[in-house]
Structures are given as structure tokens and as C-alpha cells.
Length: 297
Image (tube, rainbow, N blue to C red; front, top):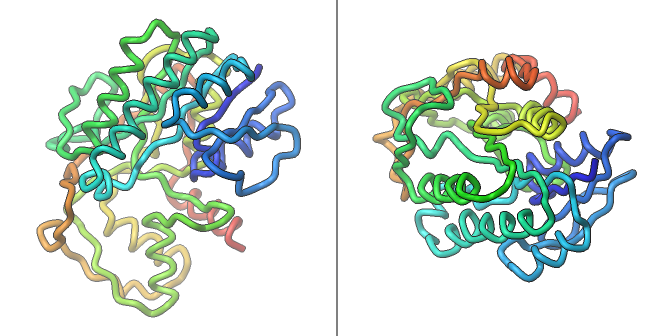
């Protein structure tokens, strides 16, 4: 099976390409804007900026993948609120270009989406929950989903929540790494306790993508962790796991932060469909921290 991954330098992209590169049944084509940040043992790399339609068409026509896993996106929520044109180009127009190329090559598409397409009035949510985004990032990701759903492709949309993990170049942080680094440096941090999520280990999300690809699953699937936690819960449990000083963690709420984009207060996912249909089984949060610890050394 020939699988093309977009956004191969991102957190999910790196985990996914690592998993597929080790799979002898897969011919991996890793794509990213610029150079690849790591080496592949079997897969091949092709430069690809998904916001350039001609480039998307050329790479897809040349490689003719059986499966495309589209992870490339603009995910910085506040930046999306400020740079709306760039956000739309990355999260909607790029999806249109990828979909058009997949229709041409007959490729099956897996598209990555987010809990931020919901308003956060209640959670956890299953796949039938009605989207109602409260940020421009959420709007763009929902619009991207609609592009996929209206296409003539065989497709799966995998929605996820608050992904954490370690990248090879450590260029992007996430809540777990931020908490760990701050406490190690003796910095006091303020963490909200009025937002709820089901945090997702990047390796689990990558595994969910592979399971969907192998089955060529059709439809929408929630791929996340199982435990409903606030950022404050995450911070406290991270401190405890790494034996760091939790007294440096101050509890606060989202009204104390002035951010360009609104956040949905309560999302989190019910993942029974993915468990039943894909055989998806995520790590517990502490197990996920153990995976990180092994990678950080």
C-alpha cells in the first residue's frame, strides 16, 4: 500500500511517518514544506506546500498514492484569528487542492480535524454531535471537513483533541512539555481549571490514522485519549509523574486570560466507535507521560 502523508514535519506527521516507515507493507511518501527534519529508512521524501495547487497536483500525479493522510494545517488558534486569510488558505483551500488531486488519482483520503469545531457547551461528544465553532480556527477546520464530505472520494475524517508529544527537533511545544519545562526551571505558572478536554498522545493519534488507512474506514471517527481533564489536572499529574514541584502551579480560569480567539469550554470525545470499528486503544495519560519520558531521556 502506497501512503502519502502531508505535514510530515509536524508532531503527528513525525509520529505517523515513523510508524509507516517501519511497516514493510507500506510504501511511504512523506511530504512537507521545506526539508524533512529527520531521516527515513525506507520511505521517500517529496517537498510539498499544500497551499500551492500546482505542486499538489504534480506530487500526487507523480506518486499516485493509494491513501493520502492529510495532517498539514495551521493549528495555532490565536494566529488563525489574527491571520484569517492565511488560516483559510492552509485549512480550507489546501484541502480543496488535496481533494481535487485525490479525485484525479483515485486515492482514499484521511483528513485530520479537531474538537474546536464545537462550541464547548457540553462534552464529551460523540461523532453525531452538531458542530458550532466559536473561533476562526474552528470555522476553518469545519469548512475543511465539508470540502471532504462533499467530494466524490472515499474518505475518513479523524477528529482529535489537545495532542501532546515530543518532536525530533522540539521546535513546537504543547501543554505537557510547557508544564515540565516551566517547573524544571522553577517558574510559577497559571493554569486554567474551567476547560475540559480528553488529551491525546501523538503516538495514539498516529496509530488511529494507520488503523483507519489499513481498513479504508469510511466516515467520521473520534481519535483521542479517554480521560476528561482540565489543563490544571494535566499540569498537576505531569508534575507528579516527573516528580516536580506542583506548588508552582497556580489554579486560575479562562476569564483571566486575554486571547484573540475564544476556546470551547468543554469538549472531549467519546471514542467507542473507533474502539469498536478500528480496534483503537489509547494509552492512559500516565502511560502517555511514560512514552514521553522514554523519548526525552
